[in-house]
Amino acid sequence: MKRAAIAAVCIVVVALAAYRLWPRGRGAVTPEMVERPRVCEACGHRFDGPTVAVLTTCPKCKKREAARVYFYVCRKCGERFEAFRERPADPTLTKVDPIQPPDLVYKRGDGEWVPFADLGEIVCPKCGSAEVGAPRPK
Image 1 (cartoon, helix red, strand yellow):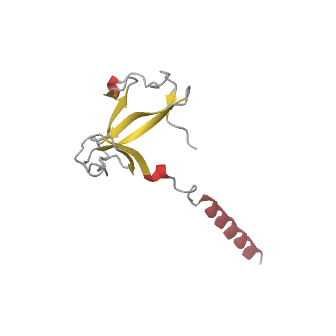
Image 2 (cartoon, rainbow, N blue to C red):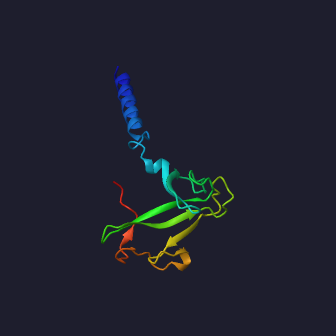
Image 3 (cartoon, rainbow, N blue to C red):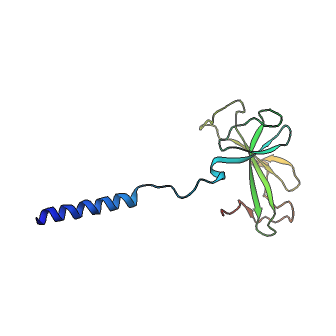
């Protein structure tokens, strides 16, 4: 009788531990998890597209030149601005190549797009502050 009670308690403890440790979703899926902002570098059209780092087809001009866009926020004045774009290293790929990192081009305060090596410091285009970064999650 005593062994049966101890076995039952052990089974309950193991079941509770497994339940607590079992991975579960952390809430609803947000649009940021499914889609990323895109901009067509041929016509300038902005839209939401897949999260993968490949060029996608623009729904407006139908050219395959839409790159992923990343925004920063100025911590000083609150301005939200496009900080950099991500393109695949090989634009002909239709799937992400894990060996080739994507090309990133950054936007200087004067509006010129440059590779990271030529960037210097990312600053807010409105107030010139260097206190910028990715938007904080809501």
